[in-house]
Image (tube, rainbow, N blue to C red; front, side):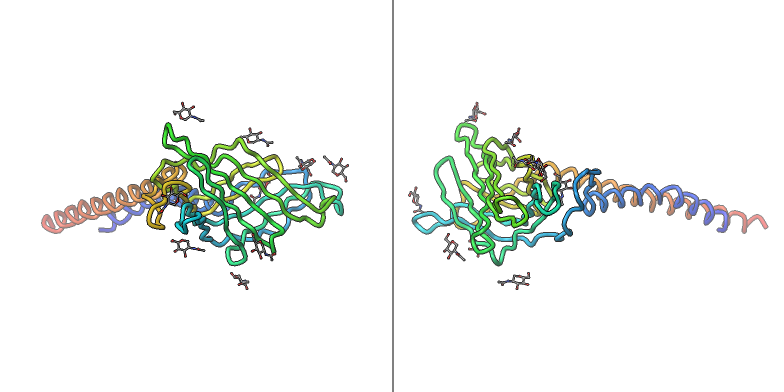
Length: 253
Ligand SMILES: *[C@@H]1O[C@H](CO)[C@@H](O)[C@H](O)[C@H]1NC(C)=O
Ligand SMILES: *[C@@H]1O[C@H](CO)[C@@H](O)[C@H](O)[C@H]1NC(C)=O
Ligand SMILES: *[C@@H]1O[C@H](CO)[C@@H](O)[C@H](O)[C@H]1NC(C)=O
Ligand SMILES: *[C@@H]1O[C@H](CO)[C@@H](O)[C@H](O)[C@H]1NC(C)=O
Ligand SMILES: *[C@@H]1O[C@H](CO)[C@@H](O)[C@H](O)[C@H]1NC(C)=O
Ligand SMILES: *[C@@H]1O[C@H](CO)[C@@H](O)[C@H](O)[C@H]1NC(C)=O
Ligand SMILES: *[C@@H]1O[C@H](CO)[C@@H](O)[C@H](O)[C@H]1NC(C)=O
Ligand SMILES: *[C@@H]1O[C@H](CO)[C@@H](O)[C@H](O)[C@H]1NC(C)=O
Ligand SMILES: *[C@@H]1O[C@H](CO)[C@@H](O)[C@H](O)[C@H]1NC(C)=O
């Protein structure tokens, strides 16, 4: 019994770092994105995870034509007048003070989010390729007020993007945090996205197609699970062998 216990403890000791490493890898990957050293001033305080908002666009005949359910965080870089250096400002879009509007055309859908008493306007343009039946986020623009910026206004726009690719009739889903780099000075962090810019029927999302990042993330729990299952098996075997041995020992004495 004692010998068997010692044996299995040794096995546990060998497996534990592996399992811990896998678990740690996952929590680090989701909690702490690496922050490369920068020559810019200290960034403003971290606003935490943004709340998820439901943003709908309704077309002329009162049917919902674009659905989006997601958390959004803006990351602005600008030349601060007070500090004489580039600063980063990370701000969350607060769903309860944000109004969604927009328009839907056959191959172009627009989602416009207005917040801060309309001082901030964030626009997403989705394009559908009807030949391939695929859509993607093709344009993002932002205008907002930044008191510490010369002129007080920040704006950024990029109309040659290719993010959030999905298929017509399906919704795009990504639980994993993603960073959409719009320009050198604007990136958008997205959290738990589900959206469908085309082919919405009955005010509901179509079947969801998960992004690659989520599928990669799913591998870690599977590996941890397999490691744990292996561990249980080894301990069980060690116990059974140990029991058989001590039993045999008993009989000879
Ligand atoms: C809404 O109007 C568009 C054209 O304006 C039309 O294509 C569409 O079928 C209409 N949808 C419904 C549910 O009536
Ligand atoms: C904001 O952007 C800067 C530079 O693009 C980056 O170093 C920083 O990690 C980003 N912060 C967040 C919270 O995304
Ligand atoms: C982006 O921010 C940097 C740092 O403040 C500034 O030097 C640069 O001019 C900005 N670029 C644009 C396009 O606003
Ligand atoms: C950023 O601001 C600093 C100091 O105000 C200035 O020297 C620098 O030229 C600015 N950079 C840009 C790209 O405007
Ligand atoms: C929005 O929600 C936050 C908490 O999530 C709350 O503190 C704030 O009062 C709300 N604002 C409005 C206008 O409802
Ligand atoms: C913001 O703009 C919308 C129209 O897009 C308008 O209905 C609303 O009253 C405006 N809000 C403020 C605070 O100006
Ligand atoms: C649409 O998709 C087809 C097939 O993948 C491709 O050949 C074509 O270039 C695409 N059109 C546009 C405007 O991207
Ligand atoms: C717009 O986005 C594309 C693709 O990410 C990038 O190559 C391009 O440099 C961006 N344009 C600007 C003005 O940042
Ligand atoms: C958006 O549409 C969904 C589904 O129709 C509905 O449950 C939700 O209340 C709508 N949200 C807003 C803000 O209109």
